Image 1 (tube, rainbow, N blue to C red):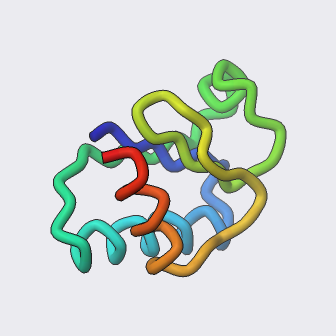
Image 2 (cartoon, rainbow, N blue to C red; image 1 turned 90 degrees about the vertical axis):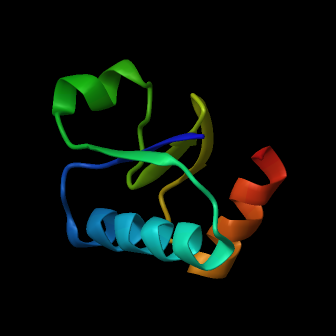
Length: 79
């Protein structure tokens, strides 16, 4: 599973990255996680609201920071 956390490095972007790490650890899911903070790369994904989360190239959420348990549900639905 390939996960990208998109955002310019703001507090909510860091929180989302932390929640993704917590979700992966609690669910025992193996994934590659990349934090994308470069504005040009962010624009290339077509994301207009951050933080955002891509799973295997698919945008699964944008503009909010869900709880780790909600992220587990998102990830399991795509595993």
